[in-house]
Image (tube, rainbow, N blue to C red; front, top):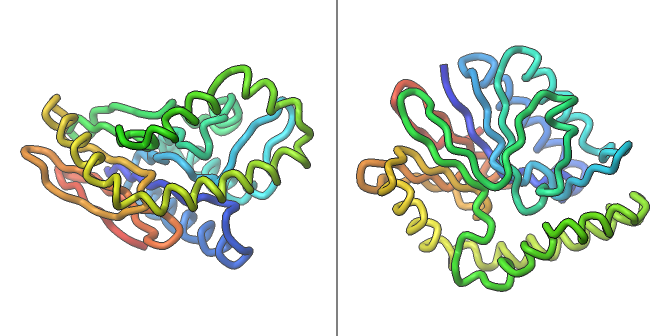
Length: 238
């Protein structure tokens, strides 16, 4: 059996054709997982924006939610590591879809290998502006205050902010890449065999010492995913 990992689809960020294509490719990946896998990790930013009100979730994402629900019902374990566009997750995934949600990172043992998974936003020490913003956006009072906005106001505002954030970070991805490699090196030195990081939208795999570092790419341009199977770690593409 195999472990599959993917990240950064940013559903809701494209035009209707792009969104349809992304959902179709996510469905194709889930079919691969059903065929020879037993676990799937979503490594953050599946959505360009996700926020749960007490009785409301975004209707535009129902197609992919049904796909994930069907995969979970087939017996596949699914873990969701929150990213910087979907960190405002409450209990919907856990209670309705039986998907475990992890804040920022997940460490697990699989196929005899120790694996460290993190979305990776704010990892670069030089990204001081975002690190400060991250603390503000995740503040309980800020979440409470945003929840007071009606959904029809809140979602357009959030999508505008998400688009601005994505444009800002995409211009700096390659600048911060060495810091992510250094982080992966430090985790491998701690004893991890595999370190997988999202966020950068760079699809890359490299051997560092005794371990493997993977930048998972995205499901916008690369349609890349990680497959760990029988002692092998591969970066593959749909």
